Length: 95
Image (cartoon, rainbow, N blue to C red):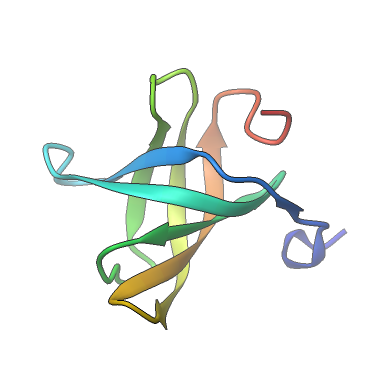
């Protein structure tokens, strides 16, 4: 099955996003939906497509390395980013 056509589950939980090369900078976000290979996250800033991120759940029990597939502008100065999970700890999809 193609990862982009997988069933996505609407699921909301808070995450922290950090740029792969500047890990000291973090941005809060919230997931909108998840699949075994990706996440859609709402955030307050624009992120460059193809950039690499570290995604951590609040509490740090889950983390992933991800690639930004797209960054969509939304109302109220927010953005939605589509993330392809490159490596992750368990439980993202079962959370």
